[in-house]
Length: 58
Image (cartoon, helix red, strand yellow):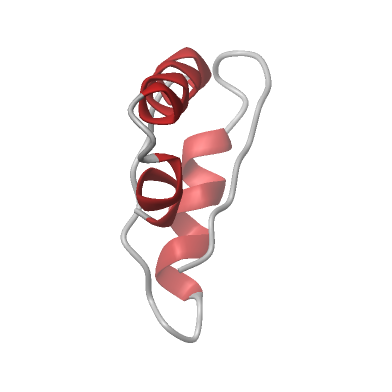
């Protein structure tokens, strides 16, 4: 699995771009969106629980 990330201001087409990349790739991928703060919190919590490797893989 590969991850793509796009950052920027609202209404600049980030979601459309990432959905296009996910669906047009040779191996179509699932596409999801989340806030960067949520990712940071999830990784920090996983590191505290010594589950960081498992969390990063998902």
